[in-house]
Length: 162
Length: 233
Image 1 (cartoon, rainbow over the protein chains, first blue to last red):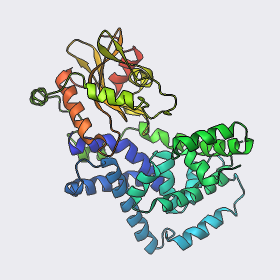
Image 2: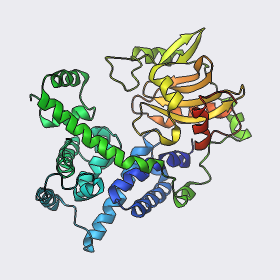
Image 3: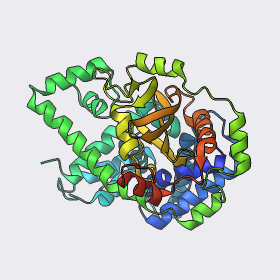
Image 4: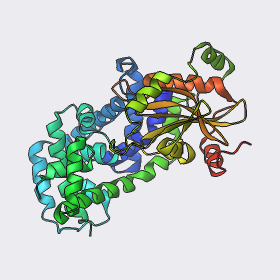
């Protein structure tokens, strides 16, 4: 199948992933558009026989992180370094447990970026820990610890299953 | 509770080895705290998946499709089909079938209760179990990312039967529907391992192109055919 056809097949999933990262629907599609353009431009870097989906997710995620960093420097978003993320995580605990019951977008928005991306990859997109680690280019232990913290925060904010 | 939180999470994520997973399952039947913890994790996962699922069904915006046009259709042209016919296919890849049977034909399900996905009738292979169910009901346009069986193309063959290409961990191929069920016309080893879909997708698409009359079914036609039980037109 042609490269472009493979990409077309991936689009619905890629849009879902981008929606989770960027939240706003049109921001998410902007992200997808940038990722597709990047992929078409660097097509020769993709190695035939390796997973195109992982490669696309990595491109999308890296573009998103770049964008967040740039925005952070302009003072629009919170920066994403570990120290600040930790504070954000603690901040969530000041909210009443179950305060965001049913509000998945709101709860996801409270997660530091590096937890949100892991939550999306593993819990929503269904990637194995190993695959998520490859996409994010981090050790597998980093995936599991970020996932654990993201999960705890989400369960706390959304309220536990009755 | 004798399992740490990370292990419970890994269990819910399907990351544990079979032995440990079974131990947790058994223990959960007599340990309410453990059972509750598992339920809590499953509930979160289900809530997240349900929240983001509708995005999959949304129409992909034209501005995104346009970047990849005009390639949103399989090459069903005459030249493409002639090309595909030149490629040689063993009608049934018995090696792949044997390997699949040896693997328990688990198709991503729990290996200790393997449902057979292929049966044999009058010398032809017929889809059964979860594979038959996927061929019967699953729509390519709305299947979940981690579905055990992924449907590729649906189309009509020269005999007027509906056929569908599919890929799964242990077995990939093309099934064609008649009264007896889904006859597996093409089979190849599944996507287990690292090579993933590249090779098999291309081969399957080429095989499908050689078999089909007209264009592959689009999402609406696929749904319609399914709702009519894949009866010949």
